[in-house]
Length: 276
Image (tube, rainbow, N blue to C red):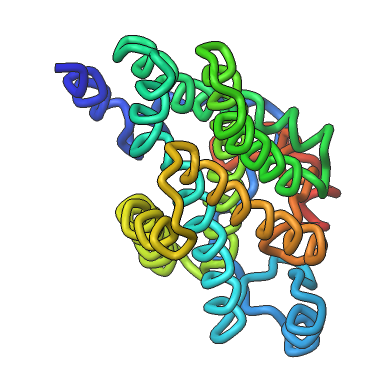
């Protein structure tokens, strides 16, 4: 019955309600809401060369947008696949080491609790870690997977899964944010997010098939195999992320998470608007 709560909040989420109850600050500029303009050919060429957006009010076009979208989809797929072993294989591992179902439930809940917590600390994490945010988040996932696979006690499982969820909870909104930026307009945003969420569900669904095939390939019957195997996969992704740390898909922009003006009447500096 918990979904009744957000259902009751729907009337307060409409555009008309938000605009009717917004707070206007006298003497402050409200930036206009409009579709971004097409970047110049020079900006497009610079973006293709460096892999990072160039020019003011840039929105990605054509093959550039699709290439960056595929990169984000691949990263999201791997990150989701790597961490979802918790849902599939943690009960078997914990039971094998003498822990009961209550312990499994608490440990599993730590994954979702820490992923939720990451959303509240994301701006602060980016300000501290800056362009290394994605790499450090992947490092947390790698550490959590190996910790769960190698240390077998109740509190070790709690700690490892919490750390793993913390990393995934940082990666996920970063990818969402970059996807909205890649889309050239609002209509494309819906399509791009649908593709992205497809990768999420495919990543979840494919876990038992990949792990089963890898077990057969490496002739392993260990209950810890899934965590070690996925830890190695995310470690490879981490190394690639470090190598490509200045690419659009990987790099986090700390300035994007400073307090910025919005279209609902927040503070906007005229010079900032001119630069934007």
